[in-house]
Image 1 (tube, rainbow, N blue to C red):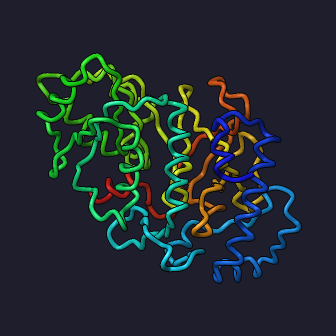
Image 2 (tube, one colour):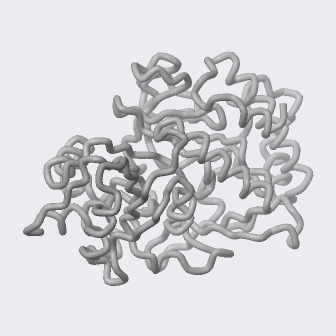
Length: 359
């Protein structure tokens, strides 16, 4: 089945057996492709004794540690086919991951993001308020995970307006004008978790004239480490925003620059969901065997998207728990899970967390 054919399938419609068959076929094919086109990857697969003929499930495909993309330039296409490089977030002094994209991979990332997010937002584009500064969008050929996230989600918006100035203060006239232009319409807000908290929520608290965003839907993501250290839970985060500006439709998401496009959206029941284009496996710390449902482990993320680099099966630096599969109360099929946080001694790398550290 081609990727264009897979894109025609509703993103949360396949049950376990159907999804496993498609993922296994796709990920096995990607593994063979990267062995043939990426010499470093081929050496690693030989070192672990990988044989494609032995793959019965995508669980059998070796994973790379996500940190490897900070150490090596892993590319599976000719140099002249690369037209974009994404970099991960990083604090000062950290080495960042570099992800090299050809046009086909980049296009599929955008198409996949649209399919996943529109299952939650609907197909209609909405007026969009971006909780960030426009200054973050600079070099389109090589930009950070933060810039890539803003550009990626911008496809869902109309009349895109940045809520923060270059000084990261709320641009009150711009926001009030935006609200007035779209009074009575459903609006979309997008931002990274810490920035929404630090530069939007905390500023709204001290405004004399409160902003009414009760007709808004907020999508946010990029790390919770700083807010957890401030003892701010997801429930409190949501409730505080509701109290200060009337926002009630608030959805978190989990994702990484190494698998851009295949994000895991939070449903109305607070569960993160894997679409048909990707999956998560949790692995035990002691032997890397897959965990049972309800058992915490290291998150492995697999994705059909990475064709220009071998990022289709990655072991992250996050711990999580698979909560169930095919039976979330929201009705979406596939695994649903939660992220417990970063592994001990892992580098801070989420967009929100790295920004918060510098802040």
